[in-house]
Image 1 (cartoon, rainbow, N blue to C red):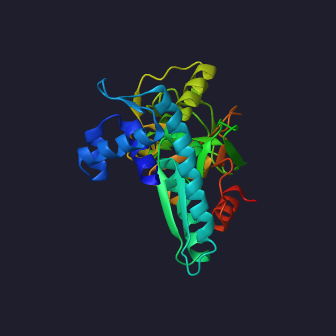
Image 2 (image 1 turned 135 degrees about the horizontal axis):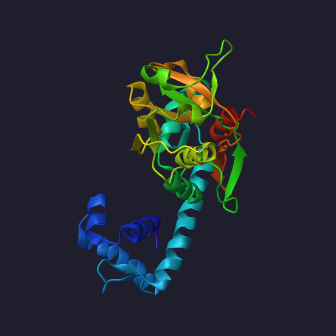
Length: 300
């Protein structure tokens, strides 16, 4: 049993299709089948039931997948630790993050890391929230940036500053907002002051959409003109283009690069915030690069 066989078996457990996995590995299907068969013969059990379509994991296979992931994780951790002792080795850091948060939060962090650690390789893997959490639990990143709640039994958690939520309105539609302008920072509005606005919202499974729906319920409004999108970045670009209004994290609005065509408003009576956190898999090796990056993100 070797690492390559473990990796092949884990890929097959995810795809449940020999030909697709063989294509991804750039090997022939018979070669893949031979590797899996040799692994099963060595273990003395069948990992995959080939009588079903698609193939399926046996009970032994399900147990194997869990343990094999841990073996490969530990192997990778050992390599990473030894890299720090190696002469002339260049550092590497893998960051998991949602595309929107990466868009406005990582550029400055990456710049500082590159300036401090000459030759540091930074790999950013952008995923939506659910797969991001699962990949963090599997130890696929040096760290990930996500929102609470997370599985604290499997992840170490480093809190970041809470995110306040604000309202972003297209400059073309500001006249529909029933609010007096403020001389000291953004004006404060309630969603009921904005009931005549068209809104750009996220899909119902996303946290910001749930917050928006909750605010509408508490304000007793039900907007008729709704444009639904998947990405917060798309929502922002829609607002910038004059389509409507949306809610965004304050941190995003603080970056003047994203102000074109948009007026920002504070929301009255909103105590709900998002709690972003940095997470690492429990027991994971924390390199000096990871430690410094976490300190930059958490301010500690």
